Length: 116
Image (cartoon, rainbow, N blue to C red):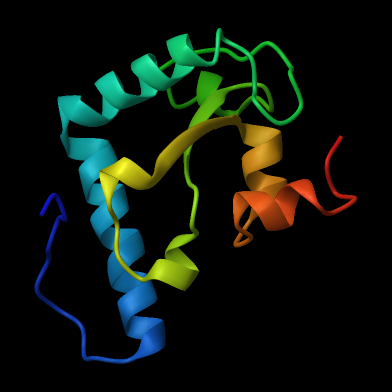
């Protein structure tokens, strides 16, 4: 199974959610694989956000990635619901849509009025 495991927290929903976030952050910051995933998903989307169709910026620079149209990796099923990071559950979105989606699934997000 392609799940990153980190020893640490006591069992429980909040600690499992925090552990999942920690796993994702560690994977994202310490592997070339995360950059490859981001680049491949960006190319597959044609450089456009699949939810709002804005032209995204692909960058690995932290300052550039703060822009609302920066490409970001997002979990199709939020970490708060699945409680475990799996690289195969990722999609690409602009920072604005990713922030608006928050802890909703893609279907829940698309069906809300929070979309642009």
